[in-house]
Image (tube, rainbow, N blue to C red; front, side):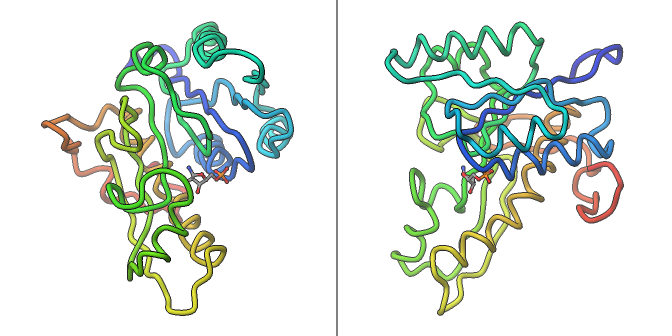
Length: 221
Ligand code: GRF
């Protein structure tokens, strides 16, 4: 938690469509995560549709190109941009690059990611297709802290989604995405409120408040 005087500043990193970023932006705008604001949306791809959508909503956007330079050099520029805006929490939302230890160290415990499976199952790319190929009967999504491991940091929240017999990758992905848009704001709200403790790998809620927030209501999460 930070002091009451200033808003809690969230930086969102994207590479593409940005629907999770928009879900976060919506709940912040509606005041469902009190005392928080989206400080900046950064993409490593110039053509990312999410950049355009973020700008339309009046959010500050930055395109920080990766091409033709080393990962750490690219990350230093992102870290500097986040730092210049006083970002407290970094949310990866479809950001398609692995973060180096440099980045993790700069924001340790303050980077979240959303992944479209029930981790630790189906980490890495194409999680929905992995679930289908494996024959899983349920899948879902996971919001977790980011550490040096691939999709392996402590889990903040998960949502379960049924896999139907006639699912295609697209249909399953769409069903999971609906849950992602609920799960990510809930997890961010919990972290912004400081309503958790780490017990080993377990992220334990300190209050019951975040368990009762109705995602469809205008109540705070
Ligand atoms: C989501 O499925 C997310 O779980 C994964 O990448 C996708 C991003 O979608 N990490 P969007 O750009 O937020 O619409």
